[in-house]
Image (cartoon, rainbow, N blue to C red; front, side, top):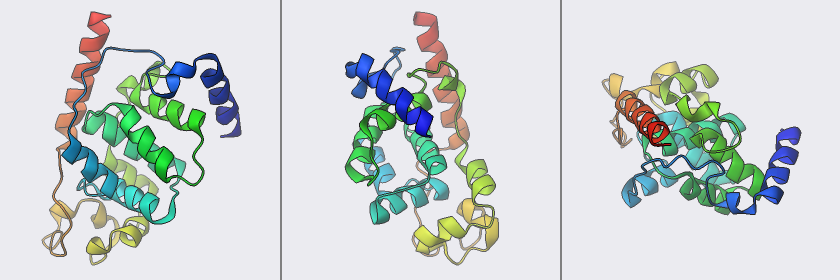
Length: 193
């Protein structure tokens, strides 16, 4: 992480415009949906690992790097929002915010930064939750409305008969559909380039 911090500081020094613009513009089609952006900011997407991360950020000013990547992927590739909206939110709320690391970490996830490969990486929030929070403790800590669900079932409340009994929101989007849409948009942008 220290090496990435130094690397991104150098990238920003050499390309100051990349603080709030794509380092490698792809010409992607983005959605501007204030309601979906607000749902993401407030931890109301219907995807527990995403919502737990966003609520942790609001409550503590911090979240683990893995959760930062999951939430960034969700905003850019499931909700198809341009990454600066998320970067600005993180800059406002992270107690360890670093302009260069934040902007370029977001671009890495969005596929418009220094590494060309991540454009096709779309984090599956269910699989990420199961892998990195296998017992659901993290999710239950920040989403009390899911505290009644045992173990890993907390990552898919829509499959539990009582999953929505305590006010947890339904999913904003279908991840599988949005993953296909994100890849379609990236392919279309690459063909235009």
